[in-house]
Picture 1 (spheres, helix red, strand yellow):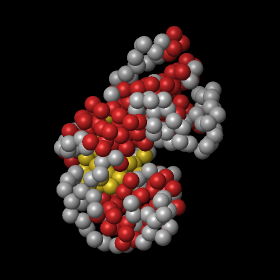
Picture 2 (cartoon, one colour):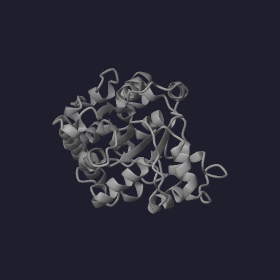
Picture 3 (cartoon, helix red, strand yellow):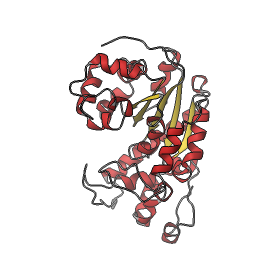
Picture 4 (cartoon, helix red, strand yellow):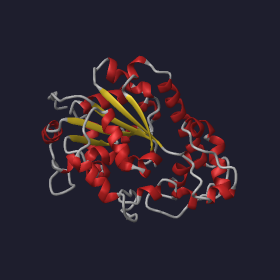
Length: 312
């Protein structure tokens, strides 16, 4: 591991979200900032190993990356997991021949990371906010956490693809389906994190902000400015310019991830896809997070189809 602790101003930014929760779009608010090095899912290799995500190893990985020190496993991932490098602007600049990082050496990654004033990263499926506690109390990292939360009915709809590239919809037809169990599990985790944050633990005060995906999608510039105000930064021109260019036209398919879209229409597009029965199944296992986040429950097919009836 190449150890050159950089000296950079505060804060360190973390975006936490659920899978298919809108984090690709939200992450661009940091990725488009020319002063930020944005890490795309640094715990990707550990997220299917739940004990890691709540362990010293996960915390250690985040600590090292916030200091531009690259664990061996992460170097392997960034060289082989194409989304890591192709979606992060700061890695594009240090990788040779476009998106290829195979020949990039450790010192180049460290130097490239160290050229930025701030570090931002996106972490999916975080099991508990307490995983981040040592970063603040022991490592003295000035952490600012953006918790992106999306209506679970929208998340479930986005997860109804059969496979990685297969866009055929899989219906949520059984109360005990794997998809419904997965969404229920995520809803419980997110609800527990929100309750924990609302209990106002000392270490988290002034470090945690909830952003609803639907609010961001409906009014991205206002919410982006609000996020940067929370970070005690000015909103960069590059960020507002990217928003203007990527949220005012029809959706363009880029494969599995879609970043250029009519974001306002995207916020509740799931209502054109899910049946009322499917939405009701999701509501039944996600009632707590729907209510605590001030989303509205659906009580009829008519409400579902009436898009003038806002659910957030």
